[in-house]
Image (cartoon, rainbow, N blue to C red; front, side, top):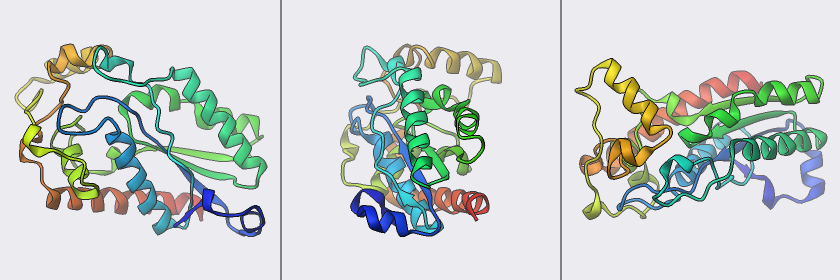
Length: 233
């Protein structure tokens, strides 16, 4: 794994095979037991592991995401279009510097609208020379996505010492809901997360643990690296 910001200009220009990963997170509330940097922290570590496994250049994590739905709780947000324009400019610039295969690794659910059409836009702007592939890390685990629940809390226990388990509280649990109820609550959460969850937590973090976090992390990075390695080689 090579962090591109640590390299000098001559070294970057001499690298023969140039593929890179850009992690994107957010700064938003994750209950009382997790820091607002949770999404950024997790996606950074997943990106590091991916870069190491696949020989990618690692770009600095974009810390700001689209998190307005968490208001009035803390969210330091940018608009969909702002994030998309930022990424388009960055990917075009990478292509101009001979980095033509780019993985955008997303760590926050609210960023997804910004990323939907980005691959096509960059391909059109570069006449197909620069290829961009977009993935959300949670798609590579065999568990339901949550927010400050069991999965995210376990992952944070595995990668950092920032978790305060004594403050963990159960949030919205959907296991016993009907499919129709889940669709309805998910739609509400996409615009008013606090109204849907009450305390800002989707899931139950109270049984989270480091061991499960390590297993989930390994599952994600192994599955993701298998997919990415087929795209860049």
